[in-house]
Length: 142
Image 1 (cartoon, rainbow, N blue to C red):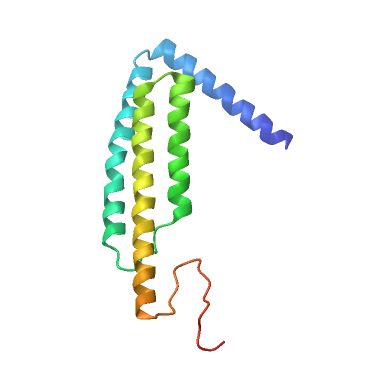
Image 2: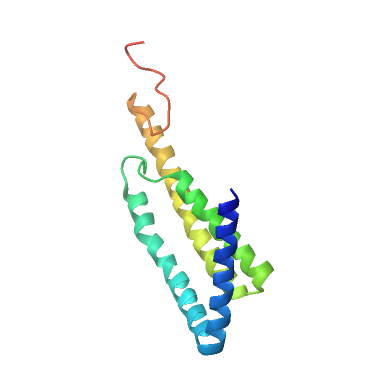
């Protein structure tokens, strides 16, 4: 465990060294990195659209969508937005990550609606088919 902490400290030292070197020799690097980060994070919100469309069009209750994955993405984006506000005082960065969190929440909401509709449709048809993670309760061989 000591080697883990030593490696972590070495990584942190390297990061601080890199930051100082960049500020001395490449004063434009900080602004360029921030611009790149902001641009990529802002455009990323459009990457959620295909997932939303696929979940909305799915006829099997959006069974390929993972609540755990998208929930973690949601919480991660919220945490980053909080970090941007509290630690960096950067409202624009916080807004970008809140937008990304909203997109993740939209995917979870569409998935929930699709699964509820699919389950209701399956029950209306009397099917014994289940969604991933569900227990089979009314099987003919029990």
